[in-house]
Length: 432
Image 1 (cartoon, one colour):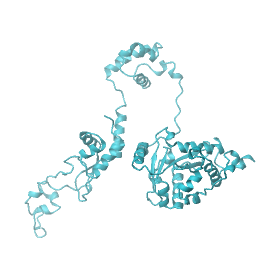
Image 2 (image 1 turned 120 degrees about the vertical axis):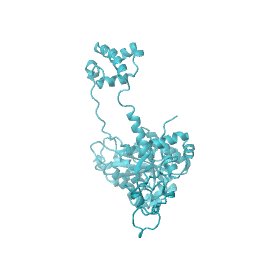
Image 3 (image 1 turned 90 degrees about the horizontal axis):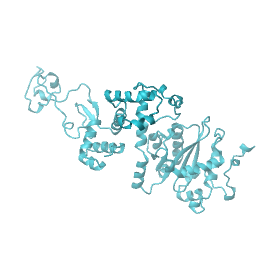
Image 4 (image 1 turned 90 degrees about the vertical axis):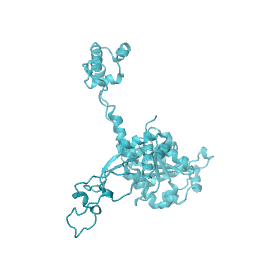
């Protein structure tokens, strides 16, 4: 049986929030009922009491006939069970247990009682997935050998290594006696678990240490945001909404020493490409550019033109909530991410980037460019006839398929066919 995915866990949380039974949830995600219950119990989150220090009601409250515990009959003439202070003064107080937590699925999702003094447990998909990932990592750490078998391997392998034998030779001649992989043996030697050391392996000490990657690694929170908007989810969404237009988004960068980048947006329906010059390759700049476009178009038209945006997992796009909402918090689009190393999933935009490079070759900085020059490049690219559209240009198709207010805002104009230029000469000052 396959491992439970983040999508499965999100479905479980949604089901619990809507008071669905574990059986109904199991049918929805295609897992067994026992699997769902084990998942909930194993990864539920303890939240404590809503009011710290408050005691739950007494289990004997319904049958209690005690009077006068507070010794003040003038103020309280009824039975003590009607007084909230009885749990503090009654010697026979016995805490009751929550009826919801005592039965399946043993969590408080879907319970909306405000006056609750019980301990609370909730199931959160993100917390459960994080906990599961931590478990996967921790189970693979350390040494998965008992001391006796580890000593036997050391007695076999270390003397042979010190004779100058390679691990490939040792595995070829003693594979039946070694109960782990070659990479594990390398790790044991590197971690000084065996008597042999790296210095005993001539080729090993010649290798240079690998340089750390300059790419920023995603945090767990960012990974969850990406997983909840994965390409698989994008395909499911498009199956449910086949008539929805898709806009592909990416950035084009210059030399490493420069900061300005180009934000590109391409409409799949007609291959029209928008290009916006950004000061830096940051989340703030991307959000600011999209919010500006939303302000200029109006949020209703923006929703119509950009219902779905598909982009890669670049760090500049890893603020999905800010991209999906306008500056006032109203949702303006849906964002999804391509799979890693799968540029073909937004291949139309990647192909169009070639046209940008015809005018601004790799190695040329964007620092001296202005938005007016970028708009000029954009108009020449959009005025290039395409075979796939039977000789029509993206601009001509966009005039029919897209609200023309976008053309006004982005200053889109058609370049005469014989005047289209996709050479560096388009930006004449480079050739003065």
